[in-house]
Each structure stands twice: as structure tokens, then as C-alpha cells.
Image (tube, rainbow, N blue to C red; front, side, top):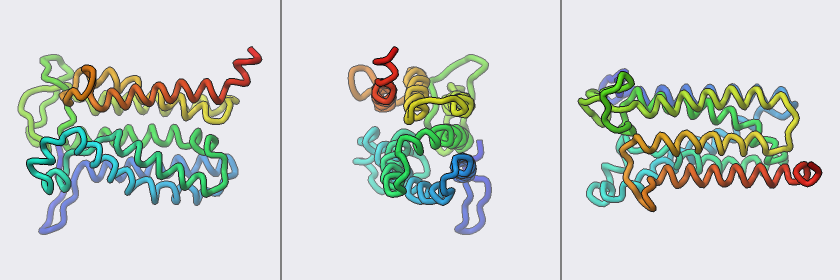
Length: 251
């Protein structure tokens, strides 16, 4: 693992930071290209990311604190400013919320832009999860003796025995989803369809991956991430029904 790639005096370049930068860059390039293909001002990509990035960082930390309140109460400053302790779903939800307002201000169709952003989000999510693996930030799975097991002795949150590298599992699924969405965008769908499909395909693997992770149970035998994943799937299914209700009535 490479939590720190380069360090000189007060300058530190971490593995997670590098992968996060790659994730943002790849998502931006793809979003800009997709906007150009649809004759939409590509500046919208910059405006969305300018707001979504800081919102995502704040959201990821807020959700981690809510999920690990005991750590926060025992060491507030350490928890807030730690290089570890970021909730990917917290970042996703905050970025989505604040990105929505930017899209709304652009006067473009919100659902149309959300469809365009869906594969871009999936690509960014995939690279971001690789960053979690590279840094060894603690979002591992449970102990395993299988060939899939990976130890993180030099991670931000070190662990000497083999565990499931769940960030890589999520990264793999996310790239598959991105490829699928890029193929589906060539077909005619009601606006919003691709985005709601993404919500379902984002939540589904995460819900099951959580069963082999070490996150604390918060309600009804489920982790915070599983509850959010269920919410995303329900929102996705509901959204698909709503945006396609005219087709369903005529079927």
C-alpha cells in the first residue's frame, strides 16, 4: 500500500489524494466530452465540479462522523482532520445535492444532465475506490483466508492479516456500470432513465459488499451504507416508474 507517495518537509503527496485527483479529472473529461456531443456548453462540467468537489469532501467527513460518533467524541479534532475516515456515500449525496442546484441554474433539463453525468459519476467512483485501496484507509472487508485476501500493514489504518479488499470489488462493479451506461446512452429513453438506473446499480453491489465489511450496525441489522444503498435503489426504481409512467400506461 502507498498511503504516502512523496514527502518533503511539510509537503506530502498521498496515494489517496493522487487517485482522487485522477478520479476528478477522468469524470471531468468524460462529462465535458458528453456535453459537447449533445451541443451543451461544456463550461457546465467545470461549474458542477467546482461545487461538487468541496461539497463531496465535506459530506464524506460528515457521514463518517455520524457513523463513528464514538471516535468523534473521544477525539474530535483527530477525527475531523484525519486522512482516513471518509464516507464515499456521504460525499456522493452532498455532491449530488449541490450539483443539482448548479444544473438547475443552467436552465438545462435537470434529468437530461443527470443522465449525462451518470457514467461520469461511475467512472469517478471507480477510481476513487482504487484510492481507498492504495491508501489503506480502513474501509476493508472482514478477515479471509481466500486467495482474494489482502493485508494492509502500511495503510493509513494498518492491518497485518488478510481481509477482503472491498474497495477493489466496488471499483470493479463501478467501471462495469460506467461501460453499461455509456452503451445504453446510445438508445432512446425517457429523460432521467439512465440516472435512475445508475442509482439502482450503485446501491445493489454496495448493499451486498457491506456484508463482508467491518462497518458498525446502526439499524435493523444493517450498516449506514446498506441503509443508504437501499434508499438509492428505492429512489432509482421509483424514479424509473415516474419518468416512464406514460410508456407504462400505453403498454
